[in-house]
Amino acid sequence: MFSSPVDLWDQEENLFGSVGDTIMKDTPKPAEVADQLWKEDGEICSVKETTAYLGKLHPFHHQVLKLYMDYFDFKSMRLDDAFRKLCAKLYLKAEAQQIDRLLEVFAHRYYINNQPDFIYGHPDVVYAVVYSIMLLNTDLHLVQINSHNKMTCRSFCDNAMSVIMEQRIHRPFTIEWNQQIRNHLKDIYFSVKQKGILQPNEENGPSFLKRVGSLTQRRKKRSIKQTRPTKKNDYRFQDSMSYHHLYKQKHIPIEWKECRISLEKEYITLSRMQDNKEISIPIFHSVSGVYRDNEDVFYIQSYSSQHDFYLLKCESREMMNKWIQYCNYWAARESKMRLMTGVESNVRYGWELDKENVPIQVWHPPLLPAIHSQASKIEEKDQRMIIQHYLSHLQREYEEHMKYRSDMDRTVDIAVKNWYKKKGYLIEEITKLSCYDNAMIKKQIEERELYQLNEEIIEEEKIGFAEEIRTELKW
Image (tube, rainbow, N blue to C red):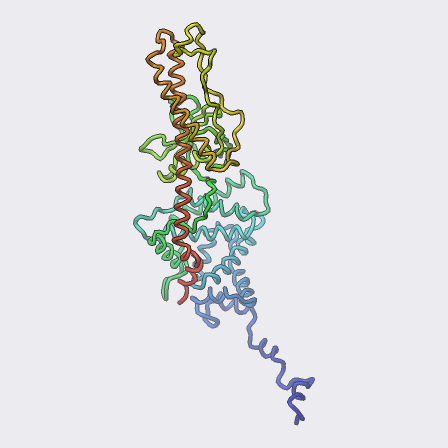
């Protein structure tokens, strides 16, 4: 019938039709597949395999996923309620990448449903907050370790806000928007805390939420306290806590006010929750320490701004110690030392024996440098040497000053006041510089420990948390 095999494929009319036509006849349309999956008739796949099917890396499956998600109506729903609705319908049993694709489409659907009055501003922000909700649900309801400290509302809000700000959304940042987001996150926290986010059932193996919980629990038991550390710690810090400003009156009743505190190189900034007013405390020549031994409260005393005295209440002793260390470290890095005082030939303060004919003057401490030193531009080891040298000078001066006590003319009131005034100044300066030196020593020790820890866990951290999840989800 045909002279050669080539003639068969050269025919204008295909005997059996095109291969593409045959495939298209056997392949259902994405809308039909999405409808069948929504109705859970089991023809395409089982209910528990739906998430894995929708999350496959293929254009057809991605189109089905978008059409499937269109069946959900998330309009006017808070994000945690929308996520509950999703989890009540879909059993999140799939590989991590497949669930990740599903959550991306969910975030876009939630974003579309809530336009134009949408506080998050972008689907990427929704996606990030959903993951924060998953971690919160895991922390509050799925990790079962006696020593585990449950995530607080403040920690959840702070972490979520950090994630939101990292998304670099194209919208202006306003105080009103910031407060609106925080209030929204607080509502989410207490909703999840009161009622955990559950899956339809736990038959045939645990869901993704349950597996993330068990994986997190196992990692805690292995006592890996942090992710892979970096060699350099920049010592920037921010947190939420309560504060009280004592001004110069240290005996007024303490009234705690909620604030957001951030530490940069030159300033400590307190952003009050009640009115979003910011208070900037110069870091140079300030000193921080424990206020009371039985409380998680520390103080910041600023010598460069009218000796203001701030109390800050932390959630834990560990947090308090970190803040004290960080504040004193940057104060050490940014502070220029005062001029070293020497013997003044034509001035008498009341304890000099060889200046009886010179009138006694009022003693004043050396002035602070007019500007901070920009010492952070100096090598850290060099700045520490400067501090240690000045500290040694003050300690010698203190020893000499204490010797004058027996020779001082106690009949002259101004001489007594001068002596005690200088004594107090020397004690304050020695205490402050000792705090600086200790903070810089701790910084060096911490960096060495982080480097050693990095070497110990580097092999394990190569696979990363995401890889562990993928391994866990293989069945």
